[in-house]
Image (tube, rainbow, N blue to C red):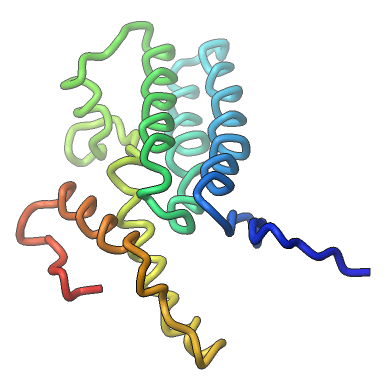
Length: 178
């Protein structure tokens, strides 16, 4: 017997498919909560530098990136700030001091730009989502000849606006790009 899911909410290849509540609950339960528990253990490490590497490479944005590509950023708005706050608190616990907003802005820059490289989910979510949608649209059309992106779906316009808010004007995406 094949189970039938009539809720239209399901997980496929590690990505939640369904309504906003299902997708955000998935992000909180499967990403934020487990990562939060692991980040809480970092200050117990003997070497803060090791903790920083683990935070940046294993427990930072990399833990969230797949879902940033697959869940609409307008649905994740509050979760994105929560993930940024989680990473910031983990960093503060490692270095033993609280950070001002300006200090956190600098810490979230790449190493090349004088930061620590702790990237913010809120800054990268739109680019991740847009690149995923754009790069998979032809494949979706090849798999299903009747495939079209939902014309009433405003997630692309929201993501485009969020992307433009986070890049310099010469790099803005025009309205007709998507």
